[in-house]
Image 1 (cartoon, rainbow, N blue to C red):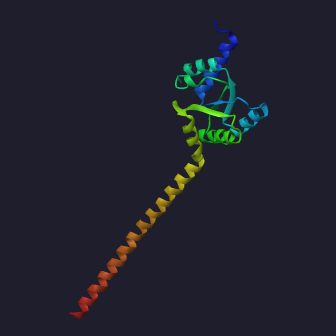
Image 2 (cartoon, rainbow, N blue to C red):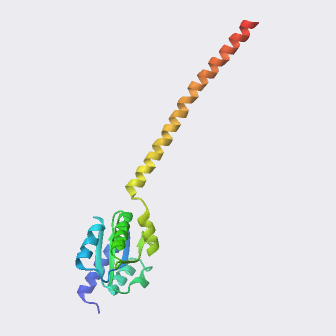
Length: 176
């Protein structure tokens, strides 16, 4: 029979899994409280890093429809719940893990799809959403400029062709 505290903890974790577009499981064994505080800051405003109990978190994840993480709930586990840009949080975790090898990225889930630790590191290598959108906008603007140049070139080319034909007809007409 679950205690009311445990039931409340499972309900809270289930809500976090459902409201997050990504969750990353880590092992934090060997990290100090100060290092965990630094890690929380490095994840950004759109992430929440919580040390969790494996059994309760597994129950909550299953209740949220996430069963792909079941085998990763062993050892001291903490979860980064990401509600914003998952790339920013993945970069924060990767960079912190480089400086603090005690942090181990176990795996995670992104929009319902399971991710391995390597996939999370690849996600961290991506540019942020804002940078990608800016590049897309720049590419689209460049294509529009090229299209405008082509459309402007067509009438002027037509005028030059007509002028050349008139000149040629004038030559032929003046020669006869």
